[in-house]
Length: 446
Image 1 (tube, helix red, strand yellow):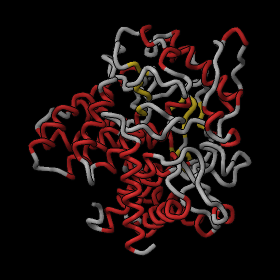
Image 2 (image 1 turned 120 degrees about the horizontal axis):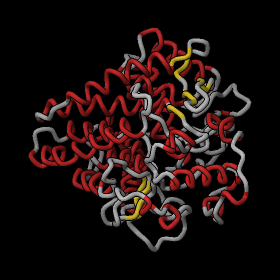
Image 3 (image 1 turned 60 degrees about the vertical axis):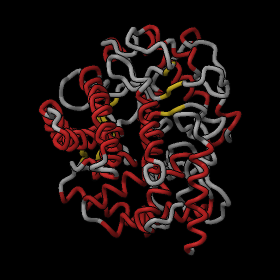
């Protein structure tokens, strides 16, 4: 794409972030996701920082306005209590079962991948030396630290430095085939589910979305969370879905690293974080790497066994900095092989698996924020050529198919499509595009 057209795309991306702004925060997209989402906002900040840093700071402040007293940062903040196009909306969560939950804003009762530490570092490096930025980091640092404390206190019952999730939505990879065996083994009786009505499959293409059985299981696990006040020890004791997720733990490690850096910059005590980090890095490497398939995997903590599936979370170990040289080269080689096999990078699930679905939510498509994470990890490990492929593939897809939630990975199919999949005018897609283009194109933004 030539420079004038690239400039127009950058302006379009800025307009999307502007149009999705809701007086203090950014929604992922209209109607389908009408509230503030946790890790979405983190990636939005990475785009906003290039042209509206004050809004990026406000975005994070608004997100952390929903933080619970126990440190939990919910995956949804319901700043509006009148929006009705989403399920489960705020009345469903009944967060008053836990006295740590705020009265306002209303929130969900589960969390999402902890991107906030490294997002805070990226913002700080952008405006390092400016008094407003230093004051902002001093304000947010203790809040992010409390979130990490939540993970290690409430989600690491064996005190091994690896935290668990008890709901697929917490992984960020909601409908991944990773969870199929666990979720399909859960027996649900009708009286264990409240009456509910989905909204997602009325707004988006039903064939792209999780199936009804999946949603019943999601609701069942949320009811279990309510039963144990969302942070009780009964979750670890009872939940049939109890997973040490590779992505969650990789991003926690990377955000620990950022907090250590920021703490040393600004004079905070980082001793506790360094203890967490040492244990987490060692356990991640020892427990989640599976030599037999050449991949980091998730671990089924309930049944004490690895989940032997290759998927996109493995590559985030590069961003976390935990892979040794040999492992890093193996992961890089896997990505380069996909290019040779006529795939765009990076498919979200193993393309050789019978469970791979190139269109359905998290079962194969390319996700913009994951390409950003993998791009950074490849660069950090010296694989600049592969990193540029990851970056350029996403830019090309967006240029051709628009600012969609996710994209087709199979070139033969993708090249015939006019648009991407899922929600349109999607905020994290716009934000990642801005960040990728800004890195190489200089001050193109207006």
